[in-house]
Length: 149
Image 1 (tube, helix red, strand yellow):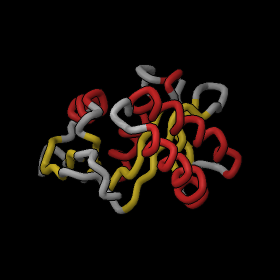
Image 2: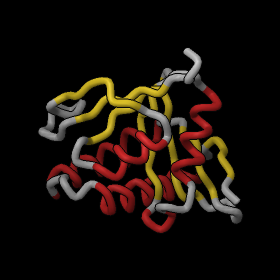
Image 3: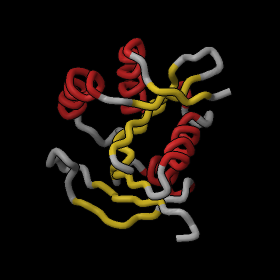
């Protein structure tokens, strides 16, 4: 059974492991230099300050995490061992329960993630040629709204 809970300070090392594993499994388009630079940012700046939702297995082992800021899913990563087992879906369903309208940016080269979000009811509303740090990794801007709006 999958549970969703707020992150704890003790989740920090596992959250970095989740990020590392997920990016290695899905972000084949990243150069090694960019991966190393992002690793430092995620480890030293993002994760220590982030308030995350954790998707945990029935032993309360963190298998994925999601960060949300003002109706935007900033991050959603699932450990490679947990891919395809419902952890990502549970996190998105939790976000949907919290907010009627949601947005997320997805790397254009990450076709699996794009397909996942389409399956979860998101639609593409825009595109940027570069990522938020100015790197040459195009982003697809997605939005999910309640059907009755």
